[in-house]
Image (tube, rainbow, N blue to C red; front, side, top):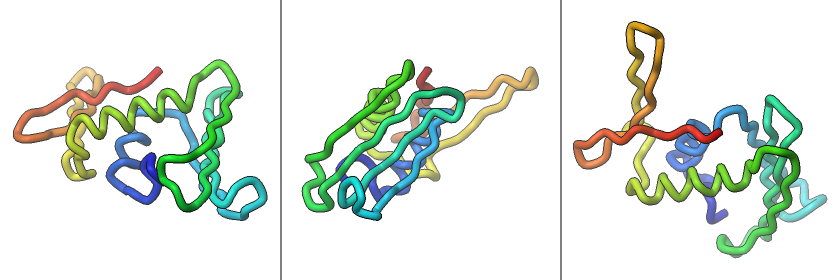
Length: 118
């Protein structure tokens, strides 16, 4: 699938920047050849992304609830692309003595703060 399907690095970045989202793949064929089901673990929002199994640039999105999960996922993927497709190993976490934490990704020797949606 064009949007992160099967790319561990993209999936990691999306999972990190779209907190509280649960992702599940459904390949049963009962809805579409491949369906990604996303649910907000803290509320009623959900999204389904139906993929025909052949064309990575063609999929149908349905979503409902107050949280725009699909927009958050698409924005996280776009940020990952703009950062140059960083790998899992390029991500890091800094924790201050106060307990505050900052997620970052290092690209070309420069650290970029990872913005968490919501």
